Length: 373
Image (cartoon, rainbow, N blue to C red; front, top):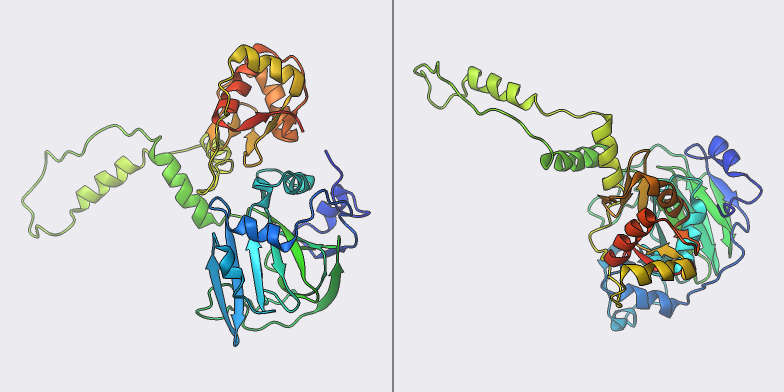
């Protein structure tokens, strides 16, 4: 596992003292960058169909928010200040962004969401707000002033296209420079204003609401429940009010629905599928070459394999999940597949046939590529 970008803290210390408890400023958290995008690089990403992006502007005290993809001409119309462009899931497109995201795997992969990059000129920002999830805010280039507050008043500006707090009274303030990082627990009010043109790389985490999970779980159950029986009423009597819902009818329907049940095994299967399922805009491309199994095995022995940047792979004691589905594989292959899930790559080696069969299936779906990076 790569070293977590936590300064002098160990991952154990961070989890015990800070995670979901209190903010933490880490000076020079990340000092080596194998990829340092300029604004044109980010705007090019924001113009792609398979990239989620937003453009936020503040004009005369009012906020506007547009969703991409954007044409290059759109950015020529921007003012010198008071705008921010945000590019989601950069880890899906840039290997270094993915490597940086997975340096945070002292948090389980099931909780990792994405690495988002925002760029703002001097004076740019998105207003005081709060996130419902943990976030690490890494400054890349330029300087940015962050003000934060533990305030409980989280009332939002009405009718605004983004979540902006009506009232914000900061308690702490820092200026972050290149490589500095700020961690904030959920629902911690904060405001960042660029003092110089620069970027914020945000590592966000999944924190679904109970309502979201409930709806998704019911969808999951819909295709899996098998209820026996059919409604019958041989003792039906003449109704006084034909439009009234008969009490016996309601009781019988309630009894039939009591056949819907689940246990922890079903919930675990739901979690594995749901939390590895790709977002709606994500697609996978199969290999260009029609590589047979024998040639694939030889290539793996020479090159190894790596998960596609967009792939999510999880596992439990019995199953391996990848991109919203179970990976059907012999139990003997699970140890190696778990290694792939944890490390997101496998070194060159001659693997057992059961492992190669599973890898070959993933390769043909575009879930992984040859070459361990």
